[in-house]
Image 1: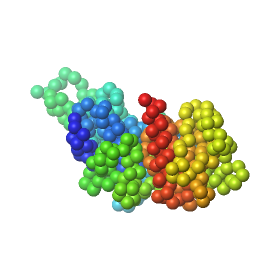
Image 2: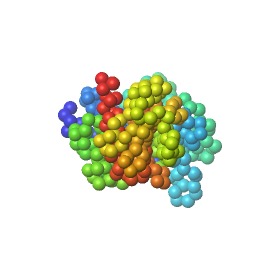
Image 3: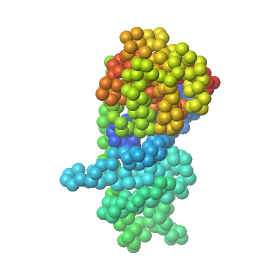
Image 4: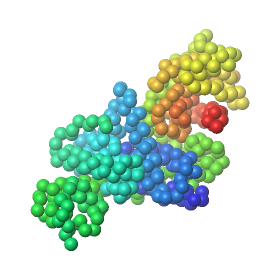
Length: 165
Length: 261
């Protein structure tokens, strides 16, 4: 793949990567930084990309960068939440929007990523399995758990304690 | 033809919502849902979740892409510079300092670990830079010994960049406790007594381009590369600090490249 073609591929993917990163982090600044780091990593690794689905490749890089980021956050016992942008629940017109954010925030990272890749980014189960580097069965169980937890929270149950997988 | 043979499993319900059902299965699932209100309610809930997520975040793709995410620009810059992580530095010079590059003054963000190291480096800067008699442990005159000692304690090669070309001489260095193990701390000084420090420690955080952080009158550029975090600290004169950071970066990255082969 030529350099210009590669670059065009990156550009075409940026809006979707921003969307995915925004939902993953629920923090617009952190999201764009994540996309920036993804692009830098992709440009550095261009020689390792041998064609195929660039979109999936980029989602993989971004997902892994976010996992690393959260892992390093959680290693610090004095640090605040395992997650970013722990938005407090609010009443009023914003409440619906906040609820879905809070619901997402309560998910374990792998489950959240799987859910977002399917419903927000429209990836097939097979593609999600490739991005997350796991069998399709694992994707299905992450999806199932994510949806069950979200339903439980949105139905008004108390948020379950998260176990770090 | 409705396939009655295989029972409807949980996976089928998810696949139904996500359009991943094989062709022959759809009618069977629909028949099942018509007869099982609980499952139908769950499927409805999952659909509603998906719609809420899309409503909340879908609009992102309609936003103008911030200039710091311009792949074409990253590419042009990368062609001229050996290391793409230098992009942030050059873009800042070439484009007159977009606020997007430097908006990251906050402790939140993609790497709290790096920000902890940066905070430590800035604290150390403030603590030692005011010292007249004991700013460092080992003086710059003993540079080979200094570098050897720090390398031994850190467990990997430490180098003191030569900042002579930009008017800074090596005052010396010391060892510091770092968030992930010991850190090397080197101090440089200009002819008018202005001081800069270079801090280096291990990091498990993902790589970053140069990032800026300011705390009152002290500022720092930090970056993570190859499992190390580097922090260049100095007075909060952004342009000057950038020159110092870039000079340090050039030499430290070039050396690492050589070592990596």
